[in-house]
Amino acid sequence: MALGVAVIGTGKMGADHVRRIDTAISGARVVAVADVEVERAKKLAADLDGCTAHDDAASALAAPGVDAVLIASPGPAHEEALAQALALDLPVLCEKPLAADAASAYRIVEAERRLGHRRIQVGFMRRFDAEYQQLKAALDAGGLGRPLMLHQRHRNTATPGHFTERMMITDSAAHEMDVTRWLTGHEIAAVQVVKPAPLPTSMNGVPDPQLVILETTGGVIADVELYRNAGFGDQVQCEAVCELGTARIGDGHAMVVQAAGRWGGAIPQDYLTRFRAAYEREVQAWVDATRAGRVVGPSSWDGYAAAAACEAGVTAQATGVRKVVDLADDEPF
Image 1 (tube, rainbow, N blue to C red):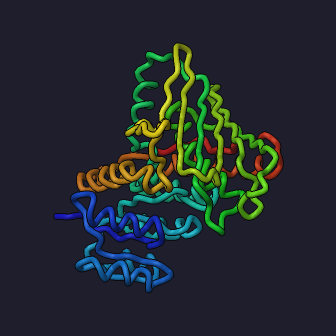
Image 2: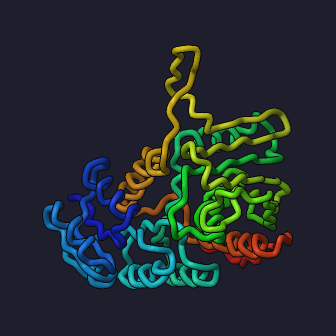
Image 3: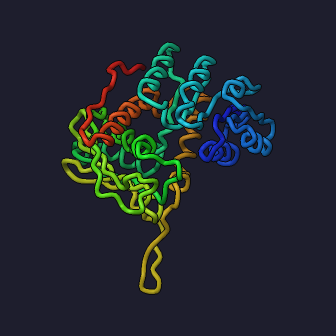
């Protein structure tokens, strides 16, 4: 029997997940959707057989046929929805961030610990991207030796009007913070943010680009170029510099066209295009594991660790001073 999923939040990300579950993966169906803008939820539900629309998470979780929940609402709403899901012992796929701040994220870790078993998978979809998985496998195999540095680029076509400077960290660099932890197996110990002279075209006065420098507990240094209004498309790259060699992903070597004295190819224009396959693998892995009674992928601790690193990053961004990450030392499970 298909897994009945309630999707909380029906904005761009939530609507894409609804489409994904309905058309791109197997073993699940959307049986309830919820959004504070209930008309938006109703419009989505109207195209799905047996799907009900709700104006809050609690009523959606209580809807008939709900076996699991996918949370894609704005970050500040995550803690309440997660608490409700955990109270019902429902499996959860929660889009990042796990919560709005580190303290809230840690409360979620503690709530899950009280259950005595994992229920939460956090939506760090880059762990499911084929190229990132290749890089992780190469580093784990040991042939390149110990990782010393990571060079990472996170470029986007343009930012929406509501985008703020702190979102450079919480919405963008958060991905690289998780990737750095995953690739190296280390926690992030400290964060520094350096800004060049801002472009006159910077959106809403947000300095862009910015350079984030991460120090890990194992001595790896990771730099992250954040360029949210690059103009030409979405480009995500990572190069690992190791003792015995280097490995790089994200060059976009798909079809290359040569004509009229020029050569080139296409660059994705948004993250849903760039990481479409990764999102599909992520949700399919969650569905498969849930149906088998297991939990896989990034944990609530991973969500908390990223939130703690982001908190340090926002402080470093505002002050220009290197900020040590304040992280608890009692990882569960």
